[in-house]
View 1 (cartoon, helix red, strand yellow):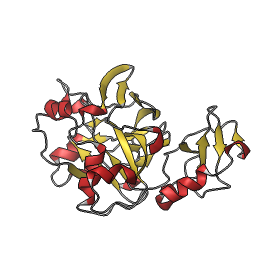
View 2: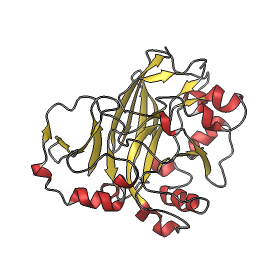
View 3: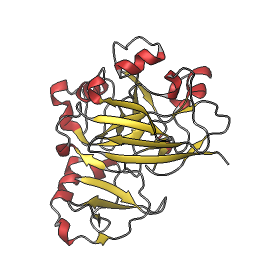
Length: 281
């Protein structure tokens, strides 16, 4: 299934993309997509519906984040071998885990706001993993059975805030609109192998990131298993699994976003995003 949310910001309704590419309104059947509403039990209830009987949304308009909110927004750093190399970092021996503020969530086509004082706002196309079942001390072999689905994420980053201002990375990752997510939450049954997905990002029409998830240092199953040794993952948690090479920080000379720049992201089978960067008011 491809699940989505449509409507004005703050008034989104849950929907489903049917086999003909039409949006079906799920608001009469489910409250929204967040927390337990994306658990395996909740997804099975959606599967049991007569999709053909659901109202067709002829003009869905704005597409919001595929998740209304998330209990936790986790990220994995330096998880593509070529990206680690372009930053001059040694490949990590264990997954690097950090947080992104949940308030960074935004729609896949909403503008990205360059925060006040920013000089080094950067882009990162990433595979997002959404948890559908509690995961605590799970094995790598069992890890993917805890994944509800996958989505596209632009893990926006302000590099000066992240690296030059001391402390943890979270403050360089968490500005409002720094978490475009969606357009769809694609359920795991439609993604048999998350390590074979092509992903790319264009900046003003120029391809700057072009790779696939086989370049991950730690695959999705290893990430979920590893994280579950330190914390309990819960339904609705989202994990951004790292970005491939081609970020602005890794270029020579470095290149960062300015108002008017347009980012276009795609991950094989998971849809596309498009954001224009605008200045903070």
